[in-house]
Length: 238
Image (cartoon, rainbow, N blue to C red):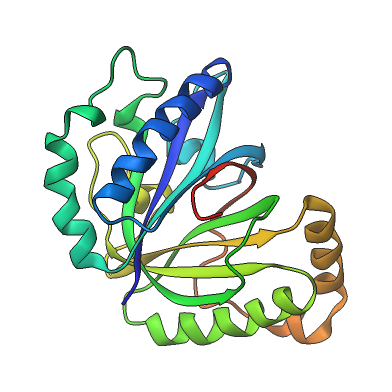
């Protein structure tokens, strides 16, 4: 089964070009070791939350923006096999100062339970990370498929929902702390690809007026989920 790694990264706004240069340098190396695509998205609309949010997830500091990113692999075995090779590859060693704090970057490995739509260029991304009952994978998949069908019908290009299968603990922060996950809970990570933000806004407006959508209840805790809107700055799949 296909597999992806998801990342949330704090980057100083003034270091955007340096970060993109680093990502462009790393992406071909990932591909050499088996990655199918590397995608980097830059913050456009990341709201503050009441309990947690994407900024607190990475302990973002003043002047920092959020990067939402993923690397797609054929399967988990290919990702695991590439990891030690990437660690040893001199091309992955920074030539100078890193344009972000790696101690506050959070990452994890996810199995896509929904991957619907086309795999082409897009202009805007809705991102979501949240906690779900550890035994609720099937319920999450069913719930996501229903919501995703609505988004695709109304203009979304692609929808991906992932179930956490390798979500490590971090020293400073991690995905579990980012969504205040409790014992026995898993972490979900997903996104919606749109042609542009206007299409996205129009679709969400329709969703708010749709009785069926309003009656739907996602199979994860929305109160602890974290959201944001992003624009792609690197996509090696197109």
